[in-house]
Amino acid sequence: MFLKLLQTTLSAIQPKTATPDYEAFQKSRHTHSQGKSVQRHKLSQAKQKKEVAEQPINEKIKLAFYDFLLGQCDDNDQQDPLTDFIVDKISELLKQPELFIKEMPTMPKSVSILITEIDDPDFNVQRLITVIEKEPAVATALIRLANSSMYKRSDKPITDLRKAFVQLGAAGVKEGVLNTFIKQMAPTNNLYFKMFGQKIWLHAEQTAQYSRQLAELTLEDEEINNAAYFTGLLHHLGKMIIFQLMIDAFKVIDPSTPPNSATLKRLMQEKGDNLTIAIAQHWQLPNEIVSALPNTNRLYISSDSLVSCVHQASIISEVLCVLQKDVSLLKDGLFYAKEHLLCDEAEQILASQLESERLV
Image (cartoon, rainbow, N blue to C red; front, side, top):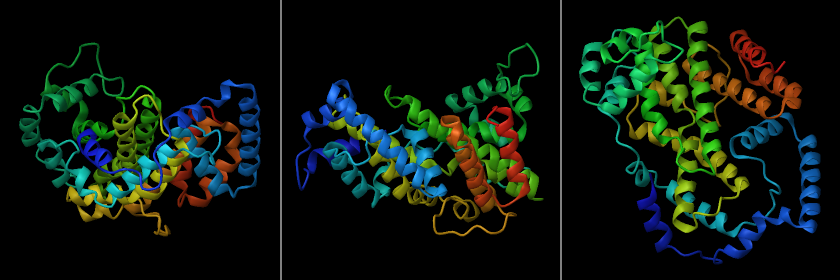
């Protein structure tokens, strides 16, 4: 997605302090294959376990969540000149988000229509059908969704777009169109990172689903309910883009080498939310949606708003992701959820999911 931009950036700028040491970097990724390095690896794991045990619960859950998304690091203190160099250059790019926003996929007209009418329960369905008929990728995705186990009502397959609309209903159509567009940002074209890219997308989808559920349970406003899914889906867009930037950067520098996940985690935590907001503003999304996107400086008190629904949905998804990776953190995960969830409905959604996934 960003190869052209990164080829220019990374070839034109040289490291200011040191040239990446590819040989040392490769060795550092394979030290576990030698006896002495195995011992160092075990000591590192023991050190990490001790540090995690001593961490406040909030930090412990956040660390476990990013381990779920990007894999666990053998040693967070390990020097990785190549990744550090690339992260430095990406950080510079992130100061000018307009540079890579231009490189992102063009927004289909169907998505533009939905965004302008996302909070209107009586949006013009016929107008949307006319537009989607001219967008084969979106039309195909909607027909596929109408034939999925979630919506399929008979053995006869749906092959017509208009029948798909009837099968999906207004809400299903909106979600299908938005999913098709946003999923283009999810990194899936790199074999090494495929499983990690899928996990970021899973987190985004879960946040969207729980946002909608919470809005339906706690807000008596159909317009806000319609916006909840879309806002939840966008909530982690910055993480997806940073992930893709890293993948593309390594294609330019050294395709055979994966980045150090500890460095990538820090970059996502520090830059992801601001990037999400910058993209939303560039798309000129309604202010209600932009204001509901992640903000580390916001204090959440009220539970009866779009902002709180999306925030709590993200917390529910984080806890579920952590426990899927390590069910021994159940006690800490439940404490973390109790500290951050604002209403009984959110706790009920979490409890229901924990039971359905047999995590309790």
